[in-house]
Length: 265
Image 1 (cartoon, rainbow, N blue to C red):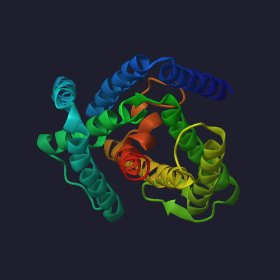
Image 2: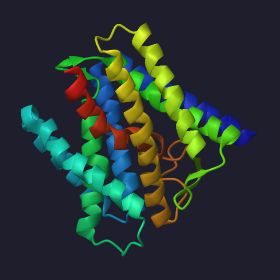
Image 3: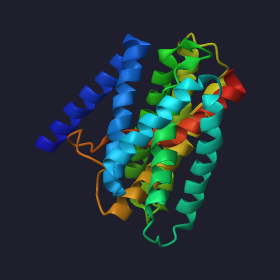
Image 4: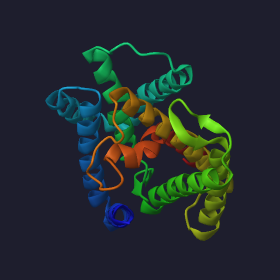
């Protein structure tokens, strides 16, 4: 019972902090997610035995360089991040035994899996140059909806494993349930918000959230299995680390931004 209470209270604090920072102003949002980025870098460096000073230095250097070339920075990030994400998907499907990666390979994973997606997340609430917090909150609502109903449907109906080698508890029925209820959430958002986006935009966005969010969860599970740990960190009692909480949006972010570019802007 104590663990349930701890997990519940920790989750409430996390959601309140997240939504509060996003709604209060674009500066509090940027500050919070910049802190999340540094924590995620620390956690990944610990998972992958990367020198933490080097990890922080690379994160700050890349962020600074892209800030000064702001006009073209997102296209540059997408050109690197999307192919790397596809590489991670192929690697996940193949599930071959891994040799111990060298330091350069580890740093490549840090940049491609953590740093660049976080820099994209920092741009997700912006439509053009206008800060639109409801857009990012809607994405988080769909992510939470997918996670919650995938778990519930998996518990009630789950018979067929989704990818047992990586995540034994995930089921195909749970995944389908998550997709269906996330589509319902997208419909509710579409009919109850003033955001100037089409129904097709929201339905496509919801499907990408479900698909890429689930794949992101599996990929983070693979990283943790390789490291021999249950959680990426312990900053959130009962929930693990920042990577554990944000794994879905971290992996989905490049693809979500592609949806923006093709269906919204």
